[in-house]
Length: 75
Image (cartoon, rainbow, N blue to C red):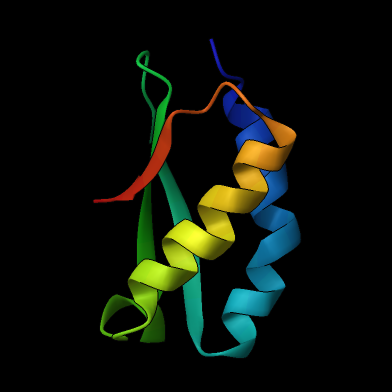
């Protein structure tokens, strides 16, 4: 089982970069199938680059710290 507190800690480290562009990220759920659900907020909610931010940024960083994560998705 992936530790929700560990995921929150990782998000806290990358959140300032996202907030600098007017957005934010909220952890919604850590599923048993090792998929992490997040919600992109603020400017990220409507930004055409949000998918790149999610996959190349947030997902990549989380997987570096927690290799067993299968995917990070936006809900």
